[in-house]
Length: 203
Image (cartoon, rainbow, N blue to C red):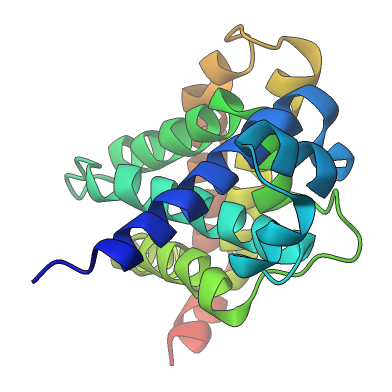
């Protein structure tokens, strides 16, 4: 049998989160007001506590939703086992995902709310996505933690530049393939120069 009460509760939770995203898009994440949020939904501010413990709990639900959205796109990647091709696929998806919604990008990859930390459950979604990327990169020979850090820094750097300097455009998105090629050339060159170090790391 359907639990209609639970369904209505979830529908309200979803509405609160969707409204919080919309308000954050106008006033910024830090500018989300529980009073305004409640008014937009048509309830009293204190009634929000029936669904969330406070504003940080709402941010946590938003963070988790963003992570699930990234994971859903990640599941659709067509990876073929070729280093350049797969890194380009991963890089494009990451930068495009980030630039599609700057507010979501800020919440997931920056620290716009100093007092907010995602819960262990929400953060685990992000960790699982990164672990899947790391595992695939390792299968392609990219297993040095420094290389993972560099690759993610390239992605966030391009996304940040796109959002900051060409919102709604593609000036930095178009640099993803070139940045990937530079990354692969750098990693390959270092591996050739220090083969013993690579073997030591794998052991």
